[in-house]
Length: 202
Image 1: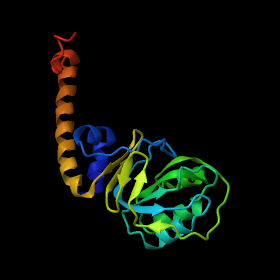
Image 2 (image 1 turned 45 degrees about the vertical axis):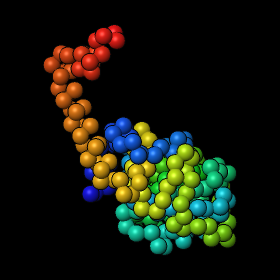
Image 3 (image 1 turned 180 degrees about the vertical axis):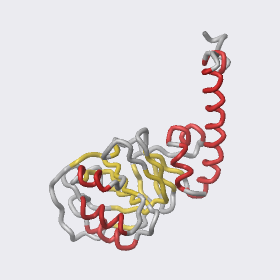
């Protein structure tokens, strides 16, 4: 199973199709329109105001992984910016999801490195706290374990348990096929009331 296959379905389809999908429920938005990402989570717990843990993560994360960072929802500093984005791209990482702020947003957008963040802040950080790599995170309403699949687009950030990603993909594809049939019937003139069997309720 490829991460790109999950991303092609999108978070709305996967979230509807798979009951085990987890939504953090955090105000995380892409830095630029059209940013998307998918890949296994590399989890980081980073003390607010310090970004040493992020530097450590960039040294060991593997190609295709998504940095999922618990920054304590802090918007008082920007622990990730253009230089770190370049470092992440050099390692082949798939993107960053952070419950916190970042900086250099326009430059990161120009690079095309996908970042989903709570906000922006230009203030710098110290580099003294090692944080935790590979921890199980409580990420808003969702838990995130290392290796869980992260899918993010304009609609949402979605977490799929790593041992359920294949089944979620199959369920998502089945839902997408049903929706394609609905589109065909709508184009042919049918109403959504009729297609969904809601005539009695109307």
